Image (cartoon, rainbow, N blue to C red):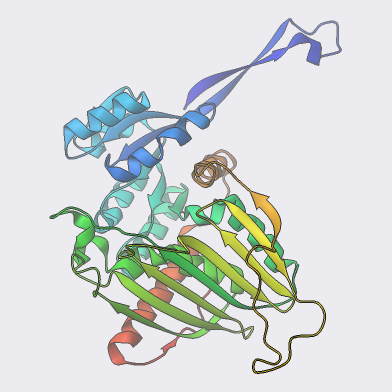
Length: 377
């Protein structure tokens, strides 16, 4: 680790012997980044915001020009084409590469005694995930999977409201992720081999993880995907998954990489006995829509009311999209410093992937998936 210098003004101390300035040397985690493409650029602002805790000291990419460019942007001293060459200069590794490379890179990083923040999904098979978990335990190093939605302030607050039954018990959670993702010809995201599947495995893993976090133990579920609308994808680019939980609640995720337009963008709707919680992720606002008062109307739709989308109580509003990435990286550093297990650790992340694999296998057979025995602790 390298050191960060923190200064405290003398007026903060009452004792006569206090120096004009108290200097405390705090170690900063030296981070190496493997993969200097699109995902790396998303983290640039975060490193600046956490400069007192972490410093990027090395980058690596098979395209050395990308590694050098990233090093220049992030202020790293070293850039390599082979990530194993940067191990002497780092304490921890951020893996941001095609998913089928995660296993080998993670294993070698643990063997070199490094902590690992692995971009989701952890790996492309159950056996590879188990290998990574065992390797992290053997090395006594942190393995954290990058599920940034778990650290998004709106989502964290939403979880608190669900657990406290702010609007009563939850009976349905709907998660909508609608975007247009059309990588250029030859990009690895189009490939089922490099991606580990389709949109559901690659992107839906975020939201299956959230559903398990919100609703507990799953019982059964179904998934249906299609390439229609996303012909550039080798596997599905659009998917629907519905899961029934032991509590009786239902969880639903609709995700598409083919949205030419959208009303939802990224949104989470939580229907409760006394109203609805709405996380408008796209615009950074969390609403609580309280239940109706008085008698419902009479006539052809007797007993039917529709909520006014503008009547919500604002529970939280945030401005910066970087906050959830900042929270994620800060948590990783905290786990390294304190020897703690991450919220999105290897075993927990594997549970979400097991749900996805069972749903996909049942889809092939035209059945509902048996999800008993899965879920987060």
